Image (cartoon, rainbow, N blue to C red; front, side):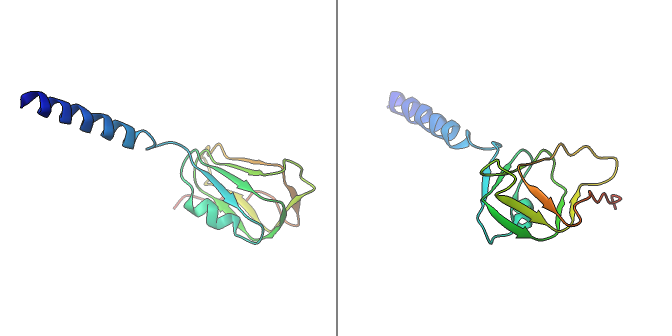
Length: 116
């Protein structure tokens, strides 16, 4: 009987380790044409990658999450265009955000705000 208890305990421990193995890993979030990049940023956590499909995106974006990668799916800036204001983080904060593979049109200067 105790052998069965040990077996069940070991099986349960293995199951818990397998179930918890994905905790804390970075996610990949896809933004389809017509969807909001800001919504993806708001749902992202540190270390996530946001992949933006080709299209033109008209919105204001603020990034306050550390270590995000925001990149176009094609990698070709001619296929993925961004218009609007773009701000990364708070002053005196190193967010480590990467924004790659986009054509920036309009007012695209970084807007840094004082942390409240």
